[in-house]
Length: 95
Image 1 (cartoon, rainbow, N blue to C red):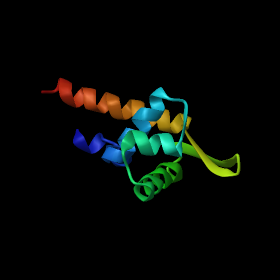
Image 2: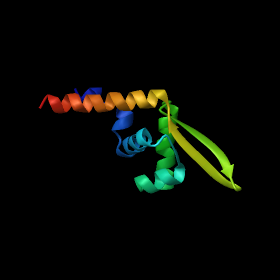
Image 3: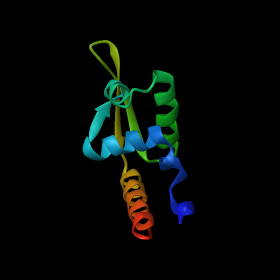
Image 4: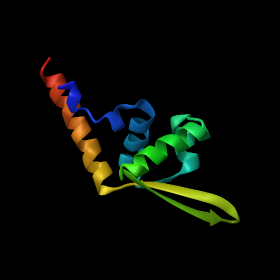
């Protein structure tokens, strides 16, 4: 039962990132940093893991000569989150 939980999403910061992205289509790195209260380094590492798993896309550009990083969920990321939530519901229903 618990083995069915996606270990990538089960980490608190990654779960917070994906949960926030489920509600907000595209967000900036700065917004995610503020919302999650994570350090820049930790947030970068966790975003990279989610990107490598194809759960999110990261778009880097410049806005007024400053770096501008935007993050959004992929279809796979949305499906993985929905499966994660369904698994949690299933676990709770068994109690």
